[in-house]
Amino acid sequence: YVGWIPGSAVRLGAPANTSSDDHEPAVNGGNSPFTAEYIGGDVAPAVIIRNTTPRRLTLVMNRVTYNVRPNTTQTIRLDGGNYRYRASVPGIPAISGSNEFRRGYQYTWEFRIVTRRVR
Image 1: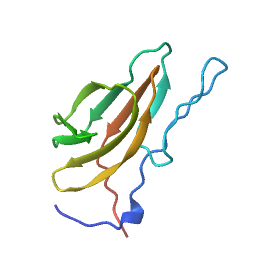
Image 2: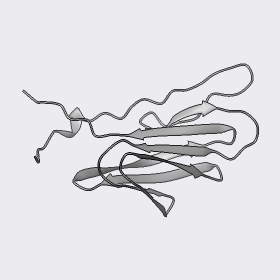
Image 3: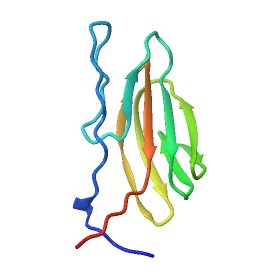
Image 4: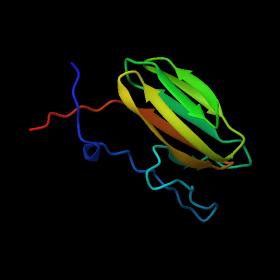
């Protein structure tokens, strides 16, 4: 079935900022879909993408395209820094934004399609 919902009914998950005496909290935008977890050291950031949909996810990060098959998980290694992203699946409006990925952190994004009945 095809249906339409108002944009105000769509909400991205809030990032989980971590804090500890050993490190600084993760830096994420207020609407970032990425959840940050401090793993320590000076390791390059890992981004774990979980595509829980029955559709192929296309993720573009700073002009590099990643295709995540339906119902799979893919790990992406980045150099760190600020990245622009755009995620899309067939039949759903794309979402985009930017996020800072810091060394010593692992980031997770569970991509899912949530449907709700509008009364």
